[in-house]
Image (tube, rainbow, N blue to C red; front, side, top):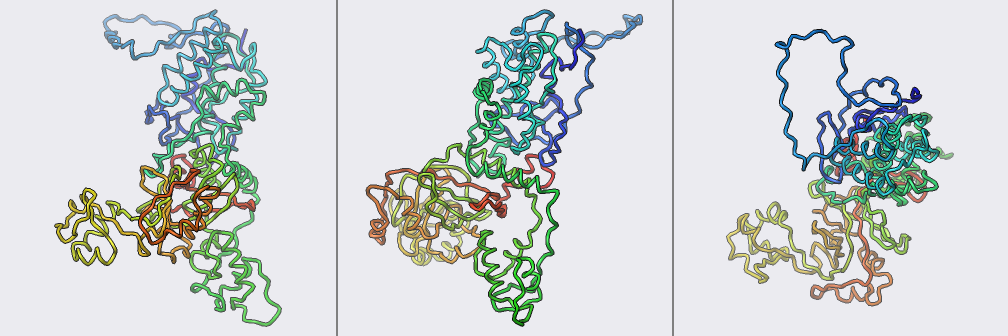
Length: 617
């Protein structure tokens, strides 16, 4: 009996090709599976995927001829007519390579007439033998699920895909809506007719591997965070392949089960909805308005030839009274301030270079930026907690959430591009009132040493610094100051009004040695771009922040903390620890449902887009 819809005889052969799926996914092209690229792509043995290869794979082999009920094992094709061969002209046969059975997986070979369970074992063996890295790990996990079910088909009923299998294939084909690439899953056609056990096994395993791959990508992303930056030290919570497959196989609603592998956070869900909206309106979007040009920064009461264009851009009507059309009047100032506030800028009514750049909407790959930020949400903890602190570095903002509701928001100063604030999650455990500032080694060597060498006694006296050695204070004038000496000793700034950490710091112990803290440099909070620190996060209005952190604490209040100001350093343990998430989102949806975009100050988004092989970077 001829097979109506020919299956490729081996799943491993299928995984070597790229399926052609007409979804127009220009932003996320096909890529090689990390750890499974026989065409010389880099492999990884880690359970966390490495940076994605963007090499184009060769096209799939030509479709094989129709397979009869007894499939033929793959072998070199024989000539139709064998011509006589001169034995002298035949080269000596090469010796077979020595194989270590302890390191080479045994591969079951399909034989005619084998049972379905035997065929599934054989098919899994082929995949395990040919896969490495992530693909091998997934294949091993999928094998466990089949073994627990007696190696019976999960998705094929008789010779056809079940309705559940068809629903799975349809949902995975729409993975573009999740910011993922359906090509990664090598999805089969749903119109299957499998005439024998080997084809049934192959067809069934293809769906299972697709589910396992989607689950890991949807939950933990496609790019390893550390390949983007050494300062991103998150470990994504990837849903194990065996658990994912069992979940979908047993689900009544497979689409809902697959959706559940995506991050459950509101930030991710809102970006996913916005991605659909951006794509839906991309073709019908109105052309960008004419850019506004100003001779210099425009302040209220000034005049500029670009004011009429600014008025038109913001939809502000020309006043009825006769005034100079170039005059920057109060109604237009109000409109500018509203625009600034809506876009995270200082609402001062001054149209400087920063406001003008946002106003003119410099070209951005909005779709790609959303997808890159969705990837970063996949790196975040799936449970942010009911009580947590969230610092969004590109937004220069900190928010405190208690019992699921935001109770505080403030401006922050984050690390310079040369001293980037790291991206990770921790747990706030205590506060320090009247803190010493213990100077990091990099600052001692790069910034302080030349000034110390010029005037040791004067430098330390002017800045309120002390030198310590083995816990004891020592006289800075007794030290021969060179790089070795400045590394060996401790330097700290005593508590007080001039201390760089201000009156209080908020501690969530971590390997980066960063924390949130007060600062005497208040003027920096008025800047639109606030990347000035050495990596720690400076908080505007630290006592309002402390009040939100201490909410419900049975012992400590802000007045009690303030009563200690000016004294010795004091540690204050808080009753309820808060999760702290230092995050990096350049695209997010605000409370009004509007997409907000911020500058990629550290280049993380650009690096993610490059790793994903997006066309616009």
